[in-house]
Length: 448
Image 1: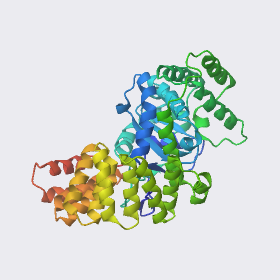
Image 2: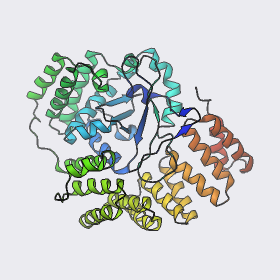
Image 3: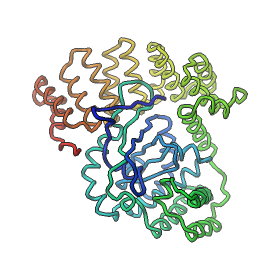
Image 4: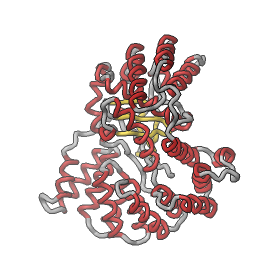
């Protein structure tokens, strides 16, 4: 799992928009940057946990775009009614998938209740810029590199009354709580997980200095907590057994995040070599790779693949370890296997394409990258790698168009338009790539 940053003259580039409003909260919040984690296995697990409660709320999971934010604080948020984000701190803090589902059910209550539609003028005024710069650039700024995780700088400033724009009234919070319990029940999930989330928020609220953004935007009251407890106490699903399959994937999610985001020493202390479980081996493989201990990392992967030889995520991770250890040819074999097992996963296909390029198979790499873009057009690293592949094949028009797409997703509309103009000058008029370059030229200039 790798994280990439990006800069422009004068400092870090910040993609403005709706994610900023959800992530930076409280009066006089300083401008900061956030990082978006992109990982095919983790994103699939988040969707698996979200789908039952979203379905219960009448919201198709395919209509919601999920973002995993690298931030140690406990936070989850919804913006524009169809974007749901959750911090790595929250994912690592919650012990069970049911707790994650409780948080998502609560946010689904806000979505289904249309609470964001009633936020202040600041949010409505920012909507155009949010859609252009952030929804188009959600994964903005992932620098050239490899692996199944990319990063994006996301603005943490924009003093436009964030607390007023995204904070909820107590009435809306209570309504979302009650809706969430209903969604959990319809999904066949014990709603007691909501009690554990509420109790955590109550403890946070009692701190002298509240720094938890979730507490700031989701005001807690004793009445609200009591209302949740009373509803759960009489729930027919109270005490329902957890889903072991869901628990298995959640344990893998936590192990993988911990292995890549925590210090190796902390990971190895939590998952010592005496622990031969899958999550422990996965955490250690990630930690060893992070420590450049290639042989140890690959040994853990061999054990994992022996147990689950048809697991695309294990083949993907072994490919990443090989690629980032200087073995692109070996990585190609692993990524190819992962793609064959999970052909619908564009992030795996991007990594495969990048490994092909590094091993000298440029045409095959270009084709893999084009296929990944057909599956997900909002990955700037895919466009950047496609630009590199096209340049090596002397396809100047495609190289310039792909570079323009990557720049546009990064929020640098001015540079994107300059590349698009150059692309149209060499592309056949009316061709597919000529039209894509024209779409970039039609973008409104980014607000600075």
